Image (tube, rainbow, N blue to C red):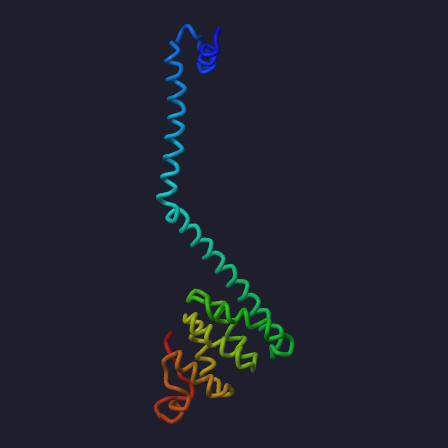
Length: 195
């Protein structure tokens, strides 16, 4: 047997004898298999090239949304813990540890964050730090739901809170500032809004 016949015999499918198939038919079978494999690989490459962004984006959006919700829950829990720990936050906590949580909620809060609004309102009442109070009001404005508006209204109606903070709350709530409401006879000591 020469080398050419030996190669043809190796190309035959298993179980097929050389006598049952002609040599050209065996080559045709092998070539067909390779061609099918090549078409399959090229087809996959074309599909991947056409839709990589649409296949990945929804998953990335979901992961980002879950990450944001996880981080918001963490910062809310932390602020609740801080608020419950002392009547004056500055006594037990370094404000440098509290600022990142307030900042995160001020930037990422949403109208579904009732717990965050309560925690932020509680922080406002328990600190005299100007930056912390500013971040608290920014967070309440960003959240903007009924609970956040109620917290801002509580601050607005609290006469022990300096006028500048009460004025800021009035601006966020769209109601008259404390100075103008004290001047007008029609307004009572406490303003009520419907959230």
